[in-house]
Image 1: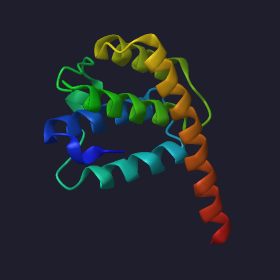
Image 2: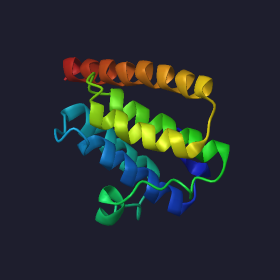
Image 3: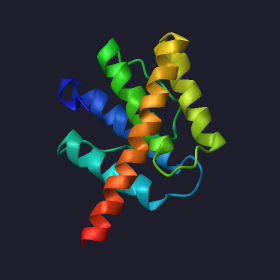
Length: 133
């Protein structure tokens, strides 16, 4: 998902917010954990989610360009939709992020639609791998 253009600071912020999204509903589902592990691998070695960033105030100011803000939005939305259970707590995290990134509502709606479909595709692929053994 175009992570190579992100700075180290943005990667850490992304992983921290993804973890926050994963635990937002107090239930870490298999699909969420799998996506989180993939994200950790994709972001590269040395990228971790410090506890103070996972549980601290949401601040996306380090995502200071449209590309990084869109990557953040898409990643968090996919994490929210991956388990087919868009919990109100996840919605709250996304609302705080979307308020801060300043995208027009139609762009946010389009990104959310794509993320919902992408989440379903990831689940389908995981199920296919499970069947293949």
